[in-house]
Amino acid sequence: MTTVVVLEPQSSGLSLLRYGKAAGHRIVVLSRDAGDRRVPDDHRRYIDELIEVETNDQAAVDAALDRLPRIDAVVPGLEFHVGVAARAAARLGLPGLPVTTVDLVRDKHLMRAALDRAGLPAPRWAAVTSPREAVRAATAIGYPLVLKPADFCGSFHVTKVTDEVELTAAYRRMAADETRDFGRTAGARALVEEYLTGPELSVEGYVHDGRVTVAAIVEKRLSPEPSFVEIGHVVPAELDAGVADRIRRHTGAVARALGVTMGPFHHEIRLTADGPVTIELAARLAGGQIYELIELTTGVCLPRAMLAGYLGRAPRETRTKDAAGAAATVFFIPAGPVSGTRALGADRVESLPGYVRHRFTVVPGAAVPAGTDHRCRLGYAILRAGSTAEARRLSTTAAGLVTFE
Ligand SMILES: Nc1ncnc2c1ncn2[C@@H]1O[C@H](COP(=O)(O)OP(=O)(O)O)[C@@H](O)[C@H]1O
Ligand SMILES: [Mg+2]
Image (cartoon, rainbow, N blue to C red; front, top):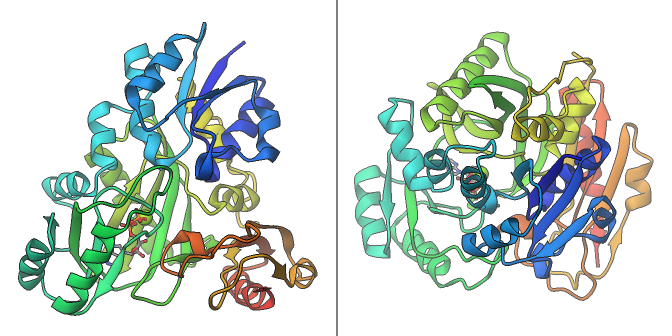
């Protein structure tokens, strides 16, 4: 039987367990399995063997893999483990991303530098490691700009700043924050980047044998600035055919520049007046149930494509539902501080037209963090609609129906 090892499944990475099991594979999970890396109860039934290990430690992961009798694929289940999985796969001679590529896509400094070398459109930016360096770079770039950690995700400490005082304060907050996300802190390595104006989109797809397939372009709904919490996604993005084509070509160029030769990608862009500009490319499935929205609207299943690619097989996904309407994820975010014990209004969301499912992630008694990163999202619903505009409207309605106490 084919054995697929999933390294730290969380967020959309959890879907790999279900699809892997459905495909008849033996599923082995390597996970810290504690705190925010605990594998949720409702996904444990897809796992044949769960090995507890510090997944942020390459040597510990390699040692755990060496004890397994057979491995056909090592698949990353979370952004932070894209690099660990690639190194493990390379050592074992299994399909995976080149180590040089994961170094680029896991580090925003190196990613920006590689895109610049390829001559792709980019904001002005600088790598900084102290508030003084940040202010000096910002003076050259000009305000407003965005400060963000070089190696983090979930919009943690990604902040728009309009002057030196805001930049220094945001930098100090970021560098001093001991909060751990999947066992890691934001740290002091950061970027300052010219603020890109324009709607935000993500391009979702996969690469096989170096060929880039775009499955969908997704519209983002974002929280009010200066933070950038994603509060919703809508598929498909409403775009002129020419613009969509330009975005697809840009995505192909970015994947090639970064050496993404296989597996799924989640390419975030802003559509500026001069065309698409990359925010970042992640060599993994998108979060926020985006794979599910894509499957609902196109029939293409990205987790299945990912598993195939990591097993060295050609993904056999075909679009079966072109123009089958739109789908959205809407996140539920408390309006202010709550004790985080109860969500109200689920019944009203359930009775919306196009309701598919919802889930709350309220941890009773847990303090709800401020609305500056993904942790303020206490649940989501998936909705379907006849058009993108209707899905957008439904999302706004749904968000207004849920309150927390
Ligand atoms: N240069 C920029 N201009 C405008 N918005 C940006 C810029 N960089 C980041 N953002 C916003 O912040 C969000 C998070 O930044 P990103 O670089 O994707 O970091 P993360 O790894 O936390 O997702 C982006 O999705 C986008 O909305
Ligand atoms: Mg991002």
